[in-house]
Image (cartoon, rainbow over all chains, first blue to last red; front, side):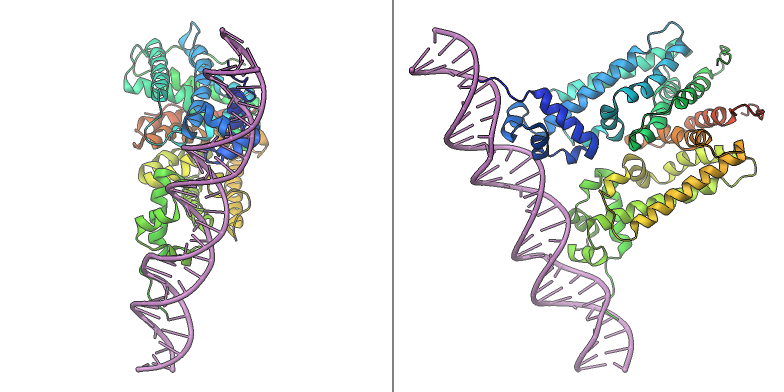
Length: 208
Length: 208
DNA sequence: GTAATATTAGAACTGATATTCTAATATCAT
DNA sequence: ATGATATTAGAATATCAGTTCTAATATTAC
């Protein structure tokens, strides 16, 4: 019953995503989203309680999608290969999702939520964080037999930080990360993960 | 002649820097800067033509200072050691300059300047970019005998991207990067820089 | 058709922000 | 002291953004 939607939530969200990617969260004003999506402001407020809910929803959607892929990349028998596969997920994902990548890599949580979070968004965000932490801990155990702070730092460094740092400059300039990046990420990731805190080190040889 | 300043430009800039670090560029409203620094808005506009000039000035000041240190770290005889020294500059600088680090690592140029830039700020920014590029090219030549695109990518990756990525999570959480980070940066930086595109590789052995 | 309802439409309202403006105040040169 | 001037001081103004509100419109159930 009721009138059929002309402007779906997805249409509005997609327009907002694009604007955020280009001009940042603060650039995504309601009137700009209205202009780009065609939906009148009334329709936007008919679907989202307020602007925070809108941006939070978009941000969570992108992070959830990215993280699902990242964690999925860990699904390999050999833990070292799993780690490298996860590290290489970032450049690949960035190549395939340039708009989402700008949102994810060029902004922080804080740009989307200030202070307290609306509705169940807090729960969604906490679930995400917990899942990521648990995946990292899982790999740490597989690699080193422990999920100590130190082991976790190593895993975070190798799987996320290197990739993130290396890819960011290309996201900023709007270009696809060149393939060489992957080779360097793999090299760095391997040498960092191979290091073991005293236990016998699994020797992995060069591949080319 | 004229009245003596009660609120120096530095006082105002310092307050603004702190606000930007905490709440982002858009959080640094004129009235908030006024409140935090004590200077009335009239005094702020007496020193800065407008808000953009203020934020641009602060951003450039931080980047100039950081970059001076980074390039200075390259001043070593052995090019590999110079590269590692530069890569380790980031975590050290972050430890010593937590406020400036938030500004530098958690925001982009675009947050400070939108579109066209005021006055001679464009020139300052271009000088900075040119100096950094030239430093990177210099190291590339010393390491590989060429400043090819590929060699530059390698240097950027090893000197800046790894460090940036690894340090960012600590800047976000407001903690000092733990010392282990430096060891991992060094490892990764070394393995990436040592790789030579066919030329004989200089063997460097483990140190601990 | 009629009632109920989801949606569109955008004008009106409210608050915040950047900037301007006018007046007051303190310091220096003479 | 007097004039010139740099600075303080903050009220006034204009603009813009988020949000609310009221009316119109289209669709479904009956």
